Image (cartoon, rainbow, N blue to C red):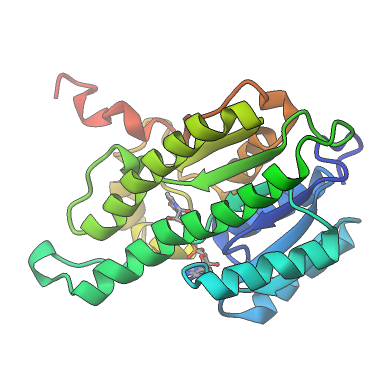
Amino acid sequence: MNPNPKLKGQSALVTGANSGIGKAVAIALANDGANVVVNYVTHPEAAQQVVDEIKANGGVAIALMADVSNEAQVQSMFRDMFAAFGTIDILVNNAGLQKDSAFQDMSLADWQTVININLTGQFLCAREAVREFLRRGVVPERSVAAGKIICMSSVHEVIPWGGHVNYATSKGGIMMLMKSMAQELAPKRIRVNSIGPGAIQTPINRSAWDTPEALNSLLTLIPYNRIGQPEDIGKLAAWLASDESDYITGTTVFCDGGMTLYPGFSTNG
Ligand code: NAD
C-alpha cells in the first residue's frame, strides 16, 4: 500500500471491476487506502482474485454481484456495501460493453443492451450513491467533498465511431449525464467527472491489438505511439477521487496518448 494513502478511510464502489480497466481502478483505489467493493456480473472467481490481490497488498475489499442495468440488483448491492463499509465516498461507474454491427443490421436488442448497461447502469448506480452522499454530507476527516463520482466514458464521447453507433451514443449520453449531474450537485459538494480512455489494452478491444498488423494500424491513431494500459487509468481515477483534484467537477479528462488530437491532420490532412 502507498505509504501516504490519499483515500484513507474512504469507501469506494467500482462497477465491472473483475476485468480490464475496472480491475486496475479497484487496485489503485485500494492502494491509496480506500475500502473497495469489486462489482461483477459474471465470473465471480475473477472478482475474488481482485479481492485477494488487494488483501495481499494490505488493503480491504469485498466482491458484490449486480447487473448495473437492473434497478433491484443495484439497490441490493448498495445495501450490502453499506452493511459492510457503512457508507460510500467514491463511485466509479466503469461497467460497459460493446455490441458492434453495421448500422442497418443493428438489432433493437443490441441497441438496448448497450444503452441499458453503459448509460442507464451509470444513472442507477449514481442515483444510489448521490442519495447516500446527500443523507450523510461532508465528513471532513475523510474528504472535503460529500462524494465523488467518476464515469468511465471514452474518446467516443467526442469521436464518432461508425460500426459502433450504440456504443458511441451511450458515451455521448454519459457526457451529458455527467455534466448535468455535476451542475446540479456541485452546491452539495458532490463532484462528478468522467475519464475518457483512448485505446487501453483490455479484453473489450482484443481484436484491435492481438496481432502485429492490428496493433500497427491502431498506433496510427495514437500520436504518443503506445497502447494504453489499465494502470494508466487506475492512477488517474485515484487522483480524480482524491481531494488533490477538489476544484475539478463537470469535466472529462481524456487519457488517450493524444487520440483526440486528430492525428490524421498532423501532416496537413
Ligand atoms: P472489459 O471487458 O475488460 O471490462 C468491462 C467490465 O464491465 C467487465 O468486468 C464486465 O463484466 C463488466 N460488465 C459488463 N456488463 C455488466 C453489467 N451489466 N453489470 C456489471 N458489470 C458489467 O473492458 P474494459 O476495457 O476494462 O472496459 C471498462 C470500461 O472502459 C467500459 O465502460 C468501456 O466502455 C470503457 N473504455 C474502454 C476502452 C478500452 O480501450 N479498453 C476505451 C474507452 C472506454
